[in-house]
Image 1 (spheres, rainbow, N blue to C red):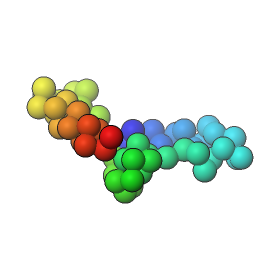
Image 2: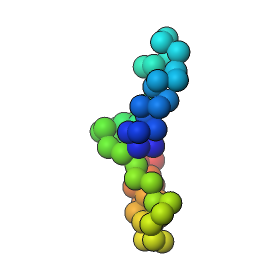
Image 3: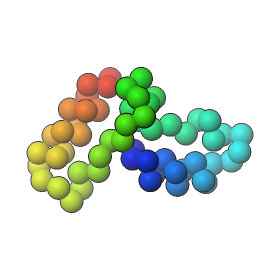
Image 4: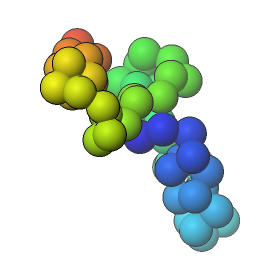
Length: 57
């Protein structure tokens, strides 16, 4: 998830649940980094995201 999705979810979350909304890599202990959206990119962009997420597990 990237920071724009994080902000949207945080805006929609009830006050008592806002602390449960986290970036994926933050949840995985890899800091406050975005997972980039490869949708409009090339196949290599999907591979980079796959590798990034795979390394966080």
